[in-house]
Image 1 (cartoon, rainbow, N blue to C red):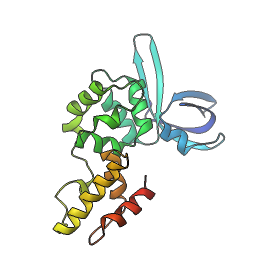
Image 2: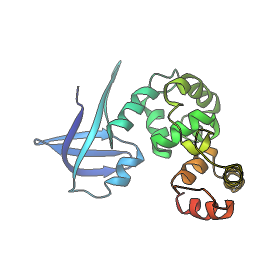
Image 3: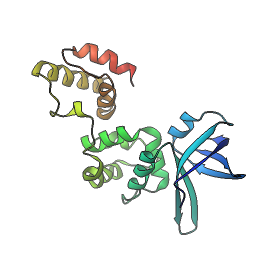
Length: 197
């Protein structure tokens, strides 16, 4: 019904904002990405929206961009994932990180979201793997041209980051932000990756 709303942020309360547009104050439930981007009232914002109607519940959800909105809708197709759980997932990880989790089967990271247990996270991965799992960070696969030494250094860096307590998806995401890793040692990759986490 509403693709997006442009207006002024009048209130920010946890995962809710009030966006005034055309003398109407729209209350939207949002993931942390929205409140992280718009940290104060009085600023102009363009929020992508989804009007959720179910039995006696009518709620307007808001997102930073259309990709996040589309991912929210996709999460709702998973049996056992309602809007609260979907918002919770998008509050603890970006769309890119979620895709990495789905592609690598990282149910542990997804289950850290409030209201999402391990079984639900595993079901999410199973149902969405064919839909979003292919859009994964290239350094996690053998389809990029790296010599054997660089590939081994990269794999060592991933394992080291995981040993430090970071999820596989977070480790891959952080390493992907480095750029060209050809000829780089695993220790150098780790130092740079830690700046991206």
